[in-house]
Image (cartoon, rainbow over all chains, first blue to last red; front, side, top):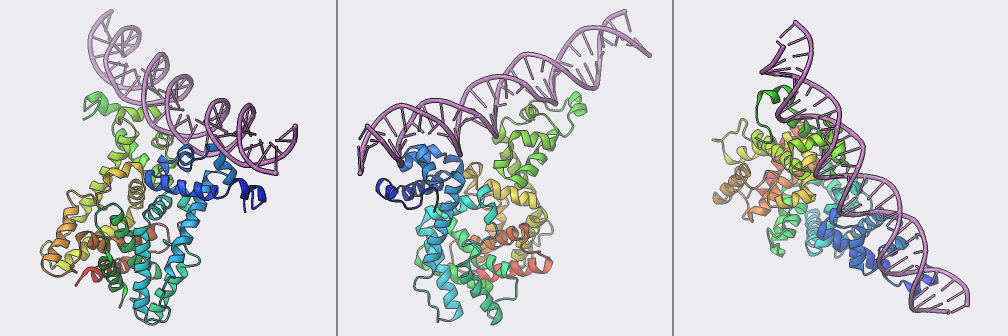
Length: 202
Length: 202
DNA sequence: TTCGCCGGAATGAACGTTCATTCCGCAAAT
DNA sequence: ATTTGCGGAATGAACGTTCATTCCGGCGAA
């Protein structure tokens, strides 16, 4: 939808170069942070010339923002897998939390990128988003907590506080796992998410 | 203890210039982030020439790291105020959590600086620290959790996970407060910290 | 041959840092 | 009391580096 949408010339000469650049940017930024990811480094990782990147992205900001959106999509998509829509609320909550945590630790690059993005000038405008963004799928999380409030299953606290109690620890343990402080196995994941539920339930 | 210690001439011409520079750096970095805090901006905020900063700090890295340590000290000091060393463990835990949360929201610059520092090249070497650093006062927090483990008062989970459950939400709500998503009053602070305890207690 | 994408050298802006110079306040000299 | 000289802190223009972005010669496809 950008400079060049989908004309035949592109399809012939640039099959997946755009994706390759995004992949390279993710790799470099996750590993080195924004400070260590000049265009030249991303270009090299992608195996293209520096100038080529500007054929696919208007500028670096756009590249970085589009990468964010893509990761966001990826995570949100995963949350719906095997979602037990008909189960009891605590079951749905722990399923969601565990799915999120599992994704964060099995896709460390995604997680590291999100962390970088959040604390950077780029992320300022997205501050209002939760870990998954305010739109779309965070409705899934919010809906869950609102239902818990309405049905008096969770503590009577502002939604924002419930969010912090429910997902703050998940982000924190994901970070610890990423940094090698701990190896989260399925048992620890389940226990952690359960403890989060203990924190918010009435 | 630096270039010029405490001779009479200094006391006349440079009373608290070093502190003024630190204060200015905190202000600019907390407001604009590291990206928006070139030496020139810090110098202007401090009301000194750019070169002057290098009379007090070897380079920008040192300035930024010393500021971090100072903030760290400031927070740690506050945790011991009115600490009920003899009370029951849950009481001590909630006192500590509330004191931490109170400081983070009433010193937004400190908090914003810590967040900036943590996700930046400067913070990389401090990654192993908890919010308060690994040494000194984080022993207070760790000791509390270890005691809880030994006395079977908290869930049998790795210390790292307990840390995440206990302090993850506190950081998260502090951030929300900072961004204006919520106004934390004393009641909400107490309720939040209590919920954290509910998350880790057996 | 022609067309247009590709690469990477070129460009200019922004930054941290340095250094020659200025400025200030004290004290010795008168 | 006034003047003069001096030490060293303060200054900010200048430098070298790094980076995002641009530009153009070359080369492969048709």
